[in-house]
Structure formats: structure tokens, C-alpha cells
Length: 127
Image (tube, rainbow, N blue to C red; front, side, top):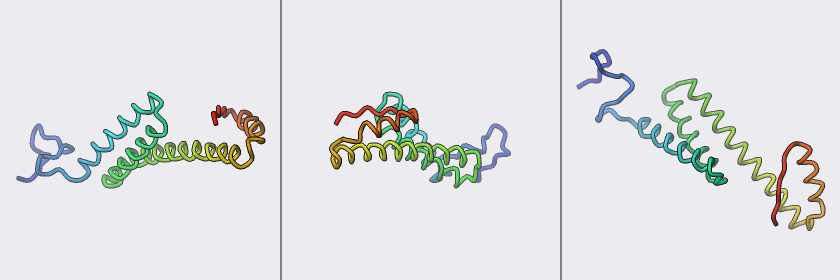
């Protein structure tokens, strides 16, 4: 039987049982990952929440590229970029503070604190 969207009552976007392709499974995997990632972000489980969102956004980007759907490509590219930049940003400042404490003995922490708080960034360290 050939899938024919001209049949009354049929939906051309819903595949039949024998017509499910890889994008069908990928979109539901990505949707589940994004729901779980948003849950972890909402209860402040860091960095697991943004990492799961990064993976889910990447999988949805793959689906969007398969479908050639530009609205989804743009949305998921931005989602991927925002999560990646957030993780890089947090990891960079964590490394900076660890290096300051381990290598310099923490003598520049007040300078780092002042410069970051001037930018509106407040880092509370517990080393």
C-alpha cells in the first residue's frame, strides 16, 4: 500500500507503521531529551541540564536538516549555540578561579571578583 495524502482523513505528516524512518525516532528522542534537560535546568542540576539540552538541540538540528525546515534549523542552531556558550563560559571561569587558587594562592581573587562584579557577574567561590 502506498501512502497517499489525498485520501480523506489521512495526515501526510504522520507515517504509517511500516513507513517510519530514522527521523521519526530522532525527533522523539530529541523531544524527550529536551524535556528532561529543561526539568534538570528548572531544578538547578548543573551542568547536566544544559548538557542534555545541548544533545537534544543537536539531535533536533539533525532532524531539521533532514527535513530541510529552515525555521527548525534556525531555532535549534540558536538553542545549540546558547547552551554551548553557557557551558564554555561557566567552565572557563571555573578554570580561571581554580588556577588562581592553585597556582597563585588566591592573591588575585579580589581583583577577579571586582572585574567580574563590574560586568554584573557574581561568582561565589568555596575552595
